Length: 127
Length: 254
Ligand code: SF4
Ligand code: SF4
Image (cartoon, rainbow over all chains, first blue to last red; front, top):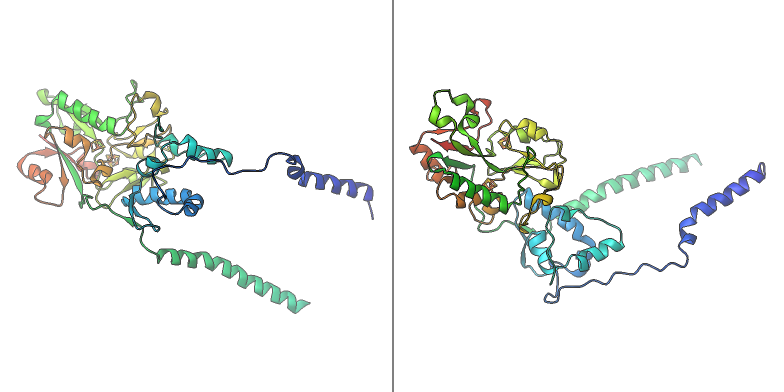
């Protein structure tokens, strides 16, 4: 092979750099789902747990446009058929009334930083 | 070799076509699903909401009550400088109607009136907003979607009535009490009166109208039996800067 003395060290360095994240994290704790405090007096959310876990962010985005721009105030649950006001503060935070023990725990562990609370007023939590 | 390459490219083309079609089909399937969003039953509707300000009933005390009702409900901060936020404010006659006033209108010129967004028929603020954060609802309310405001302030330049305020600071620094029912805004967002659209959607009248002891009338302009239309039939009235053609929907009963 021509220039083997340059190519082979180059490949080794490339391989090391590419796999850096893997061996750098050897030994550190694996990701675990954070422990959430769920509302006690409710069995389900507006939709099933799996749906909310995966879709709550797009649902909130759609709610905000439907509510602010198109004047729709009510959401009918696909799970129960029940009607809910489309409101972050009045519906979501009415049950999940402790932002730190519910929203923040997940958001912090996956490093997302939603800016909802820059404007919407977070509930004061359970005293 | 040659023909198999051609075949490969053809198949890749079909595959790409398939990828480009599928999402739209999925979208169609979602649209055909059950309807999930509904309007509340109590929602008040109109073709064009309008307000009439009865200037004979406007005392300082009434005006302050109206402003207080609006500003506490909507978390509007009181900032003691020219960077104050105002949805509803007091302005003397000569400023509101400088094109319809003259020096000999002595007792009138300094009389304080209430001013707010006119919810114009043909609103320049909507026309110039690049993100459609300001838009006009079918019922005539010129509403702001605070989520979309990028703070470019074109609307402030477009509005000939100075109805809009810009948040130079985080408003929470100036709010002692927050009403959790209504969000605050952030630094860099424009705001203004929204004709209490979210109260109308719940079947309630605007907060300032409720607090005004009859000095503010609110109703559907296309309904000839509404409070506003009755007042306009019976009294002489002015609108601000009619020559600009914006079509204000706040009338001042003189
Ligand atoms: S008064 Fe100004 S802010 Fe209000 S609708 Fe008219 S142009 Fe827009
Ligand atoms: S209509 Fe509502 S938002 Fe507008 S000035 Fe009156 S209380 Fe404020």
